[in-house]
Length: 365
Image 1: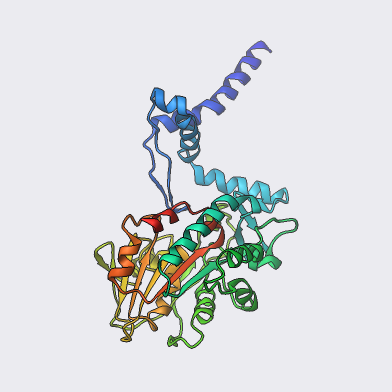
Image 2: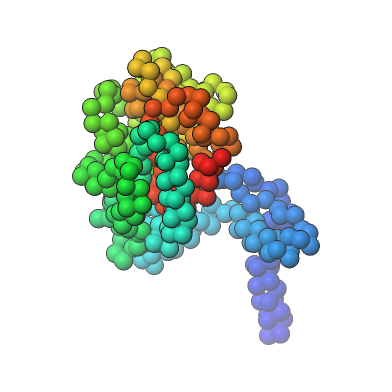
């Protein structure tokens, strides 16, 4: 019996220690294609990092990110939780009709940071008085498609958040995109397996922005096998892939991203997991699009990734579109406005992303 107990203890110790041994002994993976994000690699062990708590935080993320067969364990965990009746798995809600919706609760909206951002934008608008500024804040899937949410699921209040912005920025145009998308949700306006909007959702936003817009081409099928970021939170084997459509643009359109010429549509994304990368191939600090029309108008877009599938429609209405992603752009926004003779400015971001954005301070540079 004593030998049995010893053996049992040895097995238990092996179970809890061997994965960590494999983590530290193996080669670090730097990128997760499934999650479309960089992984935590081995942190530097130093007295300063230990005293600041940085090392302890990063080592936890490191073991989690580099855990052996991590995707397999995620799939197995999802199967077990689904059998147990869970609808909240890995930061995603398992909704009706195959929707995997990002879990964004009221606690995920930083109201203090939101107020700070609104003050900065108000100052930015006063500095650029005379240039029309539009705030297009995109509500998350679960706030619009709330009829698909599981019972008792929590999401931030998109209407309340927009009201806060309207009150703080009374001189800016803040379209009611929440109502617009709800009125169009009989169409598939969001991907079922990704947090972004589809061609239908982006087009509805375009028509709200430019009611008499010149864009009129029909959508073109790009892929039928898109499994996006919210699917990747669960790796649910029963998920059904999304279709991705693109908006054909003028053959005269030319795109430069961070000084390098790129295609507006990166067709190589068809062979990658992240099919949403078809739009410009991803995100850049500064992207300039020209040639969609010939009317001399210049639009500046302060954006996150939602704008990537919206801007192709706008090429029919603006001769030049300058997109700035403040996560990556390090230059002066004011210099671009003055040097490029910007006619209009558009902020286009997901609501909670805008609320938590700590990069908008660059507007003051």
